[in-house]
Image (tube, rainbow, N blue to C red; front, top):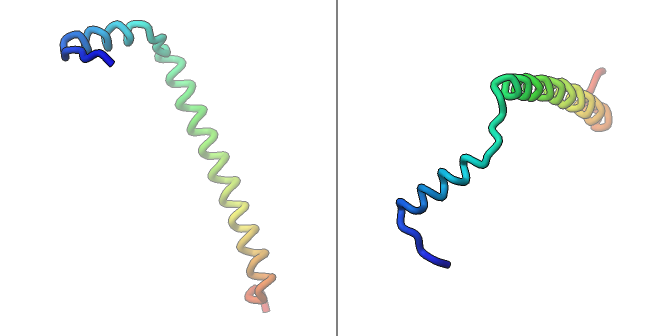
Length: 66
């Protein structure tokens, strides 16, 4: 592998960065909102699943109720 000096490396980084297709502000906002919505759904799902499993385990072990 050929060694490059720091200046050449920075020029290569700048060249590669210019090839990137950056998202628009609108795309970034929509993606962020979608992530928050999916996190909320996951939070509710795992809360309900944890509550159900906890209830079932307590019934099986005889710790629930009476």
